[in-house]
Image 1 (cartoon, rainbow, N blue to C red):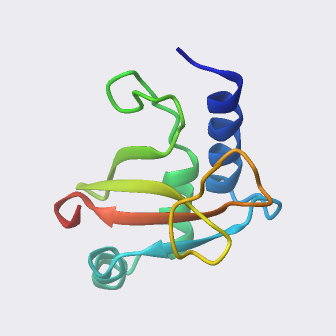
Image 2 (cartoon, rainbow, N blue to C red; image 1 turned 30 degrees about the vertical axis):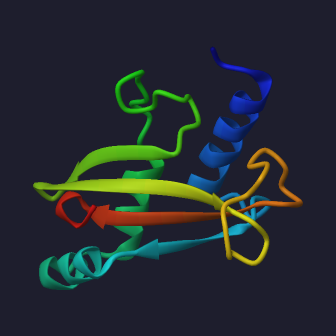
Length: 115
């Protein structure tokens, strides 16, 4: 069952993934993604666009409805992005991911085999 809190978390995760500066957090790519970008001479902006364009949320890939994970193909490589919700100092998970005053998000983009 999707509650108002889950809907709020999903909306915040979508806004963060799309680059909304009002949703606090950090963005990272793994070593594998960094190497792929360098090896294929791909701009980080192209990767960011692939992540922001993701909209294929289903019960299979988003069972909680929080829009916190996505799988996509990028230059013939299976990739994932994942959003985690931490407390303000990133020392542990947020006790209320729907509360922006308590939560800092981390978006990590990785090759599927790095998961």
